[in-house]
Amino acid sequence: MKNVLCLLSFFICFAVSAQEEAWVYFNAKANEQSYYDAPLTMLSQRALDRRIAQKINIDFKDVPINPSYISEIKKTEGFTVMAKSKWLNAIHLRGDVTAIRSLKTHSFVDKIVFANKSLNLSNKTVKTAKVAVTDKTKNTRVNFAYGVSENQIKMLNGDVLHQQNYTGSGKIIAVLDSGFPGVNTVAPFARIRDANKILGGYNFVAHSTDFYKGGTHGTYVLSSMAGYKENVLVGTAPDASYYLFVTEDDVDENPVEESYWVEAAEKADSLGVDIITTSLGYFKDHTNPAYDYSYSDMSGDATFVSKGANIAFSKGMMVIASGGNEGTTSEPHIGSPADAFSVLAVGAVTSTGVRASFSSIGPSYDGRVKPDVMAQGQSAVLSDEKGNIVTASGTSFSGPIIAGMVACLWQAFPNKTNQEIKDMVIRSSSKYTSPTNEFGYGIPNFSLALGIVFPEIEDFSESVKVYPNPTPNFIRVDFPESFKNGRVLFYSAFGKKVLEQNNIVPIEPISLESLTSGIYFYTLEFNTFSKTGKIIKL
Image 1: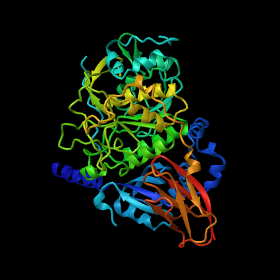
Image 2 (image 1 turned 90 degrees about the horizontal axis):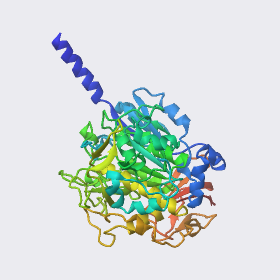
Image 3 (image 1 turned 30 degrees about the vertical axis):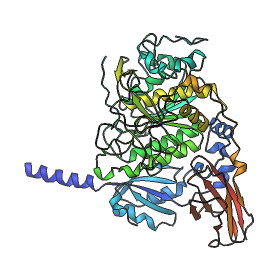
Image 4 (image 1 turned 60 degrees about the vertical axis):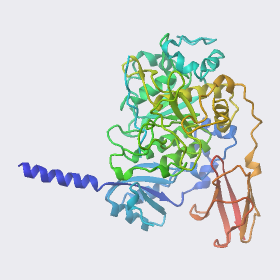
């Protein structure tokens, strides 16, 4: 009997190990123009208002995935569709390698990328923080009794914003984490419950509307922004509104969590969220080591989750990510999405402003300053799922502490773009003129940020030009030199991608000789700007 059990265990293990993770990318979408003509079928009015305020165009990424593609994919046996992303026009599959590879025969499949790089033919360093427990009503003019949470707010001069009634009111923060048990019942969250500040959420891991289940980490994170217990704990954005999304599976470290994260970010965008904060990260320590990333992948846009984070920023949201807790390990660098070009990555300091030894360091692999800023992450004051006021350590908490203050700052400057708000935070920081790999630009001074003045943002939609139009065989693109990593994609009238040109250079000719005469739609993409249009090939 023992031998039979061992044999059975072997086959079960083999079956599990044969399951691989992959992203299948599509090369087109359907009925694109109909969505442009009726944008409320894709986005809420609040989301559209955010785009209009920041002069951001609706584009190809906003259009849903063609459902017929997914239906056709599902006709093949041997895998399960785990998640999907309209932004990246991709689905996440788990299953048999041969079955997944067979999908390349579909004309609408652009490419297949396995999470296990060794399977491609041609990641989590920042674990959910290990929490070490140590043990009013709205005012018209706010003078909070911060109690023991005072230091983590006053270190940032956040109390100055609160005293001027900038407490996050009117801003919406999406929290992407592992679960939020207790938030619907315990006392430190009564203030936001009573004010109807919890707008909703979703559990992408369980495919359930019950986001109060899962790991307790999200409860701790939320309390750093929204918790309120007079004379003990006041969060950095006690009057902001919140969506709570579960994207992290505490049981398994798997690449599908990146896809859940991007799904949640897309949902946040469609709901009109202003700020995404996440204390999750992906680098090493996957359940299957074959899915681990290397430092060279921390280059701003290499991982699925960092691609999603950059797109989220391009839609007008601020994206704030904890830098990671690997500062004392053999691989001390930040993970993703903290490495992403557009993300405000946050490291951790002690109560006295000294870098916490566990805080992951920079730079990103391509040499950019990371982390961007720092906040208290060692012995941060929080609430647990039972309503106890506790202390815990990790960049998991310095990140949302900053996110809450960003909501307050943005409330003070409602007409600023996300890029302007990000620049204000960085420019107010203690090491702005002399950043380091350990400290980034330093600790922000939100009182100073209130006084930073920027010129009105240029209307880049007018300064980016595609010409000549109509054209016999080539086009040129004129755009500001500050724009980086540009590419242009061309689609047929039926939505099929027919041409792509990467690393475009201002005014340098782009050949269209491979295209037949007709009407084509194009999408121009840069780090923080995109533009769509139509061109006629003669």
